[in-house]
Image (cartoon, rainbow, N blue to C red; front, side):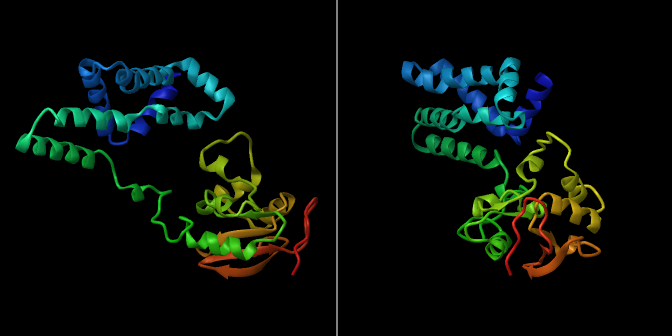
Length: 256
């Protein structure tokens, strides 16, 4: 099981400086901190959580009751920032005057070098609006929203983490599971859109069977032809929207 657990820690550590600071701070507090309550909070609890996380049995149990790909969330229970901050304050207060200022600047420099710009991640963008999501998602969801009804929309990959946050009445045939690599079963529609040749006839048939009222694709990744049983409906912010012509089984028909 360590072959699964260790990569999780490695990915969670990032550039690794924070982890080094945390371990050094943990050791420093274990040696110097005398107050029992603070030792429990800043030493015992982090160590116990870390031991629990590294235990293969914990990994197996977690995978049974949740999704193993989210196992890293247990690391959120470790008070990394409070431990580092508290130990840094304790160290800095041991000095005064110029030495204390140098110590503070040294810690500030370490903290600045310990991470990377959050917006360098593919899933992080600067908030373009009050919803903190791409404006295209807002515009498309507003255009397709059906008051008092749920609709099924085949959304492009880059929208899948945002759609349900903005409009819970818009459902998707696949979404979060694919993004998080939680592939529990084969999905012909997903594979055809993500990995296949995007055959418009195959996609049209599969989307109809899955009850998709709309298909949304980037104009840069558009179909060679209009998908079977769908018609071009509108263009929004560089995305093309196709609307179903004849409702599929167990699917309510759209109103013009």
